[in-house]
Amino acid sequence: MNINTYILSNGIRLLHVKAAGDVSYCGALINAGTRDEEAQESGYAHLVEHLLFKGTSKYTSKQIINRIENVGGEINAYTTKEETAVYAAFLKQYLDRTFSLVADMVFDSQFQQKTIDKEVDVVLDEIDSYIDSPSDIILDDFEELIFSGNPLGRNILGNRKSLKAVTRDKILKYYRRTYTPDQIVFFVMGNYTKERVWRLAERVLGSVPARKRDYEREPIKEYKPISKSVKKGTKQVHIVLGGRSYSQTDADRYAFILLNNILGGDFMSSILNMKLREKEGLVYEVDSNYTPYFETGNWNIYLGCDYSDVDRVLSIIQTELARLRDIELSEHALRLAKRRLLSYLTICGENKESWILGAAKQYLNTGVIKQKREVEDSINSVTAADIRRCAETVFNPDYLTVLKYI
Image (tube, rainbow, N blue to C red; front, top):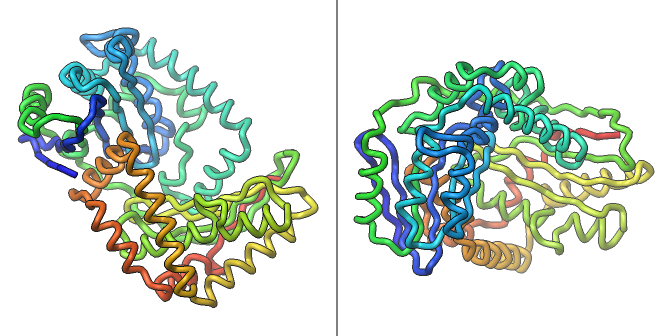
């Protein structure tokens, strides 16, 4: 794949990926998320993402939407613990229109108080909807436990107290502190030459004043496992079990991705799905999840089961974790795990939107983008001993946090 990078004089980074086809993608990825909020700013990163759509000096909120949808495109955004993205899919002839709009949204949003007040109400409704879904909110509560005392553990949506106290000055303070050009990547994927993309970027973004981030993210505190039960009165018990794991640049992350998929990742043939659902019929859903962050990671198992089955379910899980800690995979099992993961990544790579967002994140965080062959080589180099070592570390029973909704 033809990948090109470029840095403007103001520090904004550009990523261009030449790809055939009539559909293109472009957007901006900002290295600002929940963990960049101060204590009184809980929910601000997500709220700013909403407000980017609510008006610039050129366009009203309706005009922003129509600017893309009137030519058949789609514009979207999301906020995570560590980044915010604004991006669009569109027909290739509308690159200039789309790139300029995204730039306006990122650098010229007006954050009017009446708009802020209205959008806060929208987010409060979003929070209420989220609270009604225990299978979602328990994962956030779990992350708050394993990253206790750090903004990384904070709920992305924020809380009512901080959101109801929002003013334009407070939003601008957060925005100006975090949305600095040196922490932003603009990306374009489509059938264009790199020269065209660079010229467009210089014309649209070249006048943005250079600014560098003047703070460092709060260091992650020491991890202390905990077991906690919360009364929710749900029809079944919701359980999350796990702890911290490997960062997005750790040398062991590929071994752990393989391990996580073997245990309970994206495949129905995973150990936990076969044991707990297919064999025992104890759960409808069981997932093993791995989310790598810049210098740490979150690994967890989520499930829901009947109250009477809790002890049996947890016993089976602990048995399987112990087996992975104590016994190396056979060569056949290792080959199968690699083949499944490599095939899965190839299939996912066919989704251009997902691929370019992942590539932009790599470039934002590391300054480089791994080619497909490099990833494949890294996965193929993993040994059974590597996987067992990861299991011994992350699946250590003294290292696990357990959260139950009862």
